[in-house]
Amino acid sequence: MVDLVASVEQQQLRSEDELPQLRPGDLVRVRTRIFEGGRERVQIFQGTVMRLRKGGANANFTVRRIAAHGVGVERTFPLHSPRIVKVEVLRHSHVRRAQLYYLRDRKGKAARLREKRLEEKARA
Image (cartoon, rainbow, N blue to C red; front, top):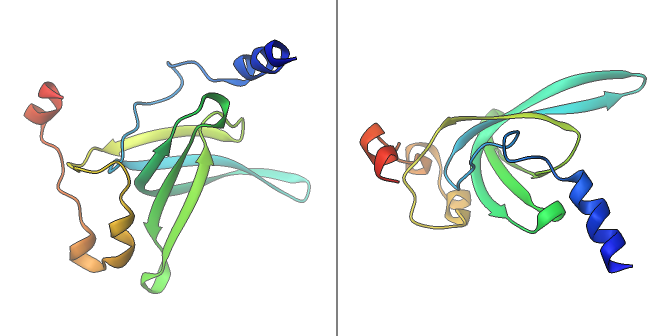
C-alpha cells in the first residue's frame, strides 16, 4: 500500500527542469490557472518568497505582496500543483533566515530586502 502511494506521488511531481531554484527572499511572479464559471484564465501573483516547505508532493512555498492601501497578502502555492502554469524568479535578495516572518511587521522602505549582486550569485 505504501509503495502504491509513493508511486502515485512520484507521477505527480514536476521535473527539476520545470521548477526554478527558489529561495526565501526571491521576488517571484507566479502564474496560476483560475477557473471562473465555465471560463479559464491565468492570474499573476507577484511578491517575495517568505518560506519554502519541502516534502515531496506536499512541497509548497508562501509568497507575500503588498496590495492596495498597504494591506499585505500572503498566498501559499503547492509546488507541484497542475494549476501553477509558471514561476518566474525576477531577482534574488540577500537574507539570513529561512522564514521571513519578520516582514509582516515592517512597512514601506523597512520591508525592502537587499538585492544580491552578480558577484554574490557567482559565489553562492
